[in-house]
Each structure stands twice: as C-alpha cells, then as structure tokens.
Length: 182
Length: 182
Image 1 (cartoon, one colour):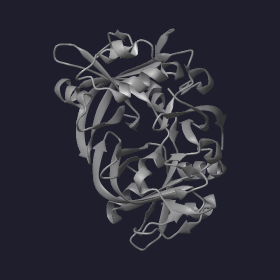
Image 2 (image 1 turned 120 degrees about the horizontal axis):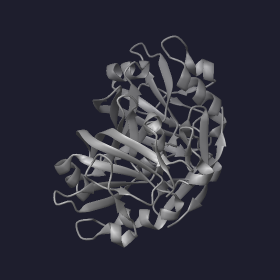
Image 3 (image 1 turned 45 degrees about the vertical axis):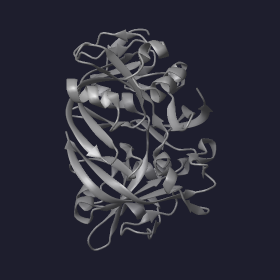
C-alpha cells in the first residue's frame, strides 16, 4: 500500500470528510445562534442520541450548557457559503443568521429554532457533556427528527438530489454522488 | 423547503453518510479482532483525540476495555466487501481478518495491529469511555498517525484517488468525488 508517511499534524483529517451541519442554540433571552459543525455523529439508535464536539471557547457550547437544548440542521450544497460564514465567525459578536442569510423557524419541542433552508432537522435535549481535550462533547437525546421527503427517502439521503457538503479540510468540501453496494 | 415529514425511525441516517473505518483491537493473548465502524469522529486537535461509538454487546468494546488500545484504519472502495463482512459478523465466533482477507501488520506503538491494505492509520490509547444510550463512546488519544502519500496529500484526502466509502444506510455506501469551495 505504497509509502506511509507521518501525518500527525493533520491526523484529524484522516477521519474526514465529515458531514457539515448547522448547530443552533439560543440564549436565555431567546436570541438564536448558529454555528457550523463537522464533528458530529449518531451515538445510539434506541434511545436516539447524537454527539457534537465543540471547542471549549465556543459560544454555542456556552448556550447549550445554559439552555440544555439545541437543533441540528442538515444543509445542501447551495448553503455552502452560509456553512463557511457560520464556521468562521463567532456569534458573540455577530448575528450569523443575518450574515449568512438563514431563516430561523420555531422548532416543534425545543426553544432553539431550526433553519428553514435546511433539508433535515434534529431537535435535541442535552443528556450529558464530556470533556475531551480541547473540545466538549455534547451528547443529546433526539426528541424530533424530520426531513424534506424530496431529499430523504426510504430512510436514506438521495445523495444526488441532496448534494450534501462534507468537510474535507480548510476551504475544501467533498460532495458524495456515487452510490455503491458491497 | 418542501414537505418535511417525521423520520424518527431513521433519525441517525440524517447524520450519514459517515466514513466507514476498521477498528482493530487485540485480546490479552494477542489475537487481533477487526470491526467496521461508521460512528467515528475526531474530538480534539490538540491533544489529538478521536471517538468511536460501539454497541454495548460489541466484542471490540470488550477488548478495548481490557487492553485500552486500538487502531483505526481507513480503507478505499476496493475493501467494500471486507467492510461489509467486518460489520456484520462477530469476532467472538470468527477470525474476521481471515474471513475478510485482511492482513494484520504490527503497529508502531500499540499492541493491536494495523491493517496493511488500508490507506491511513491511527494508533490510539483509551483516554475515557462514556455510556451513551445503547452504545459506549471510546475516546482515544492518538499516538501515531500515518497514511499513504499517494492518497493523502498536503493534509487532505485526494478523494478521487482514495475513493473513500461512507456508510449511507443498510447496504448502501456513498463515494465522494466532487470537491467544492465556498
């Protein structure tokens, strides 16, 4: 398998590409904040749970600690610029919904809103948080999950229609299009 | 954004496709075991850490609890059948290296081997484990990371050359090929 070289400086990108999603939180006063997060995954099917890893300085992390609720919103490729904006600016100083041209809509069961332009949504209640190096893992119970039926069909994404951006590294995102079976 | 329907039964596949990797562990006697895992992600860049979510019945989980070490191995599309075999059989009853035609090679710093046919490797020491619903999250410190330079260049996968299988759901895997920038 060719020459294998040390890539310790870039180790985390060995586990990329990772689906880029928007995590939405809200302040006690109800002001919503949105950030881009590529370090996310399901962690349990029953009970339904997901985990997102956020930097210790993250404003979103601070809001989730306070309100114990968040939503996860899955965008298509046409929201690539919004993903970039919401991954490189802090909500402490900017209204990223406005900056990125995203529309907050009330969620069904939690206070933080969902993002109307996204194709899929998870409404989560914080179950536990775990320190892991420079990040905190927020593990949430999924209360509601819904998606646009034109993109998510028979329990899977229609990858050609959905055109999901996965973060590869830096400014690079990879889009899956070919589907294969073992 | 069209009609949004409840997809609670399939909620976890909203966060797919997820990179499918091989997690390798070893028994006290040195016998290696390999399983396929799509629920994995980096959780910290410095210190370098990754997390994998394994079912509570997992034999790999049992071995990692005992030995506190594991390797993560990233395959290309040509190992799709091996991914399927190692994701659907238990190492309690079968030698999955032999079944899947995979070659164990000594790792640099941990006892569990790496898989020679894979393009990238992470050698990990268990830092902590966290219960999350029906799974356990194993959070490991990355001791070594190396990759084939023909597929992983300038700190990112060359997605066309690497042809990385990402699990979409059931028997379906998605291969990213197109790269875009915001």
